[in-house]
Every structure is written in C-alpha cells, then in structure tokens.
View (cartoon, rainbow, N blue to C red):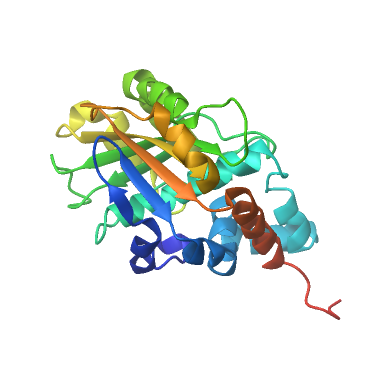
Amino acid sequence: MRDLGVDTATLGPWFASEHQSPYVLVRVSDEHAAAWADVLGVPVRRCYIDDALLDQRVLTTGRPKSELIAAKLPDRGSTMAGDFGEILVFLYHAAAEPGIELIGPKKWRLKQDRTKPAPYSDVVHFVLPHWPETSPDDRILCSEVKTKSTHGDFSPISRAIADCEKDRTSRLAKTLVWLKERALHEDLGTTTVAHLERFTKAIDHPEAQKQFWAVAVVCESLVDDELADAPKEEPTDHKVIVIAVQDLKQRYEDVFKAVHATVAKPEGGA
C-alpha cells in the first residue's frame, strides 16, 4: 500500500464485518463511503499509473496530465464498476491483514484496453514475512471480485464463487506467469520479478499457503436479495465475502471524478 499512499490503519473501520460464517458480511457505513471521494482520488489514480511515470510521460509527450489520465481510466459503466470493486477489495485485503505488509501488483496498470477489465485473477497479494528469505509462512491471497451496483439478473455472489474455482484450479498459476512476464519489461511498483519467481518457480522454495476469496461488492439496496445466493455452510477451500455499500454507483462515480480532479488544471491556470 506504500506506493498508493494509503494509511492502512484507516482501512479497518471501513470494513467492519457483521458476521464471519458461513460467509463474511461487511456493511460499509454511509459515512465512510461518502468520504471515499475525498481520500481515494490519488490512491486510485496510482492504481493506474505511478506518479513518476506520469511525470515522465508529460515530459515525453508534452500532453497535460489530465489527458494522460483520461486515456487510462475506464468510462462510466460496467468496467468502471468492476475496476472499482477490484480496487476496493485490494484495500480490503490490507484491512483483513492488519499489521502485515502486503505486496500486490496493480493489475490495472497493465490493461491493454481501458474499456475492458484487466485479465486473469482479479486481486492478488503476496505475504513474504521473511523476505528475501522464503519460508512456509509465505502466502498468496487471491480474490475473485464481482460488482453489482444496479438492478439486473446478474448474481454476483454465485458468479464470484464459480470464478473463484477457476482461480483455484488453474487461473492463479497463469496469472503469476503473466505478471512475471510483464514485470520483465514494466515497473509493477513494489512487486518485483524476484517476488513473482518465488511462486512461479515453486519447486525451488518451501510450499506456500494459498487463500482464495470469492467477493461480491453489492449496493446496499440490493444486498438482502443477493444474499439468497450466499452459502448455507462455510466452504472448506475458499471464503465468501459480501461487501455492501450504500449508493454504490454514485460512490464509485464520485471517486473516479475525484481521480480526474487530482490532475485538473487549477482555475485560471495555463
């Protein structure tokens, strides 16, 4: 979280859970969600491009930051909703692991098309407590995220559970290889090639633990109906998490407006 500029101590109160079994239910208070536009503009911008690279591209292209950022961010609609849900879960990982330094690639920086989701597993974090030494304490956190902010037939909980199985059977492994290949040519921030090779060359290291989460980010007004799809018994190979946010569509649109505002020219500027 260091490269996003997020104080992880502030995240815990956002994600207070109502209960833990057979699924985790988190209801974000409207007070906290309403503050996201004020506090997440810069961190969300950094999910898409590092500050140093943004400054470099300004010098190289001669184009204003506002234009460069607009070419990175999704338009309003399903991709924006999905990106926001993933970024929110990226932050939730840190809240769920207080005091633990998480190493997480910002996959949104690696998009080939800003109008489409990033490929492979949605949110991945590494826990490497003895780095650069590897150990059986090393872990991977992997979340499949589905977001629902408006009415429709889409069932985010059941879809997240189904796609979480893909992560467990094969997709996470493909994700790690893809990230390693991208890291050879691009800066993934705090995530390095060495971090990734600890997992892609697993035979050279102690067996790491893997934790899989199926996460649904749902508008508060829809969540009670959607909970009909939640598991009645706690799964043994993954955890189901439901994050309810009041006025979710308005909240994520406000956050992306705030991202644009962080690079807007000041009034009267050249």
